[in-house]
Image (cartoon, rainbow, N blue to C red; front, side, top):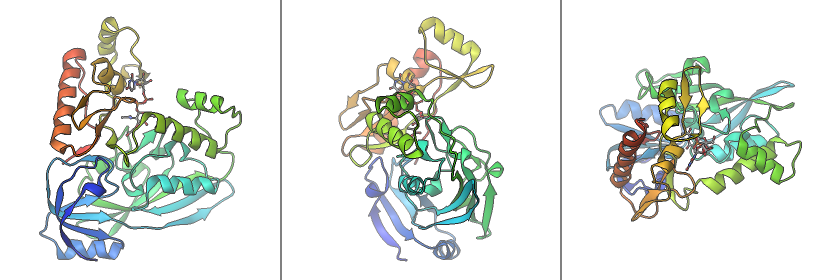
Length: 337
Ligand code: EPU
């Protein structure tokens, strides 16, 4: 384990923003993580997982700790389900494919999400009707004060829409080192009623889909809508979908016929931020080397060597415009540094 100086973080964030880390260390063992925290007590630290949910707007004048813990094991298996533990530094999509290859069911709708396993619980990643919390069993996290590993069960994590305890009271206090998933080994419960999945399966004439089929459908949908971060820098959805009151929704309906929406409760309605941004005229807009993706307005993109600050300013312009037009506040989903 070597601490390097002045390292570009461009390869370590999916937005592809080129800023330097003052110090950088890649950690492959929990013991090394503990040793950094005991020897570098007074150094400011910055934890880096897959770098898929952040926008870097300035140089990181800290010790960047790149979590590179690898390995996956089957913890236990019954006739109906399996518990699998993956270390935090495993790539999320490769891990999902590995589970599907063994015909373990549960994570298929979450195929092709960028990032690593260790950061997936922080924002409770979700797509096409499934959220991480539906298959999360527990995780181990290093308590940065005691340097002991603690276990968080599903209930301990307070999962919500793109939210968990690790974004709230536990923020900055723990590093997730591994996650255990509970997956089915037979009679898989498939979630295929999300419009795009249904039509993709129909298109392929698949009547009784396997978990692999669902994963392939999700991969095809994501590829058609979302830019590949290896080709165009991005961080997936830049904003969360706002939840508004039924009164506010009635006002919206008066001004805009038939806005897409999902009922959250009797009094709360979720409106897709992508629709708000598209209606405000931003979809596909480019501002030199950055802009709003042409197929999904929720995604901001870096076409070449954009500055994080420019993308942050664009996000503020979008937020202000949405507020002015619709009287709705939209919140960033990505972490901004
Ligand atoms: N829409 C538009 N214009 C757009 C995009 C969306 O009008 O440019 C409207 C459409 O009416 C569509 C609706 O918004 O029916 C929903 O769009 P979509 O199915 O693409 O989903 P989303 O709400 O935009 C969310 C997640 C995605 C996830 C998809 C699929 C959030 C913030 N985003 O997007 O997650 O893949 O659902 O489940 O909840 C991510 O978090 O990085 C991410 C990509």
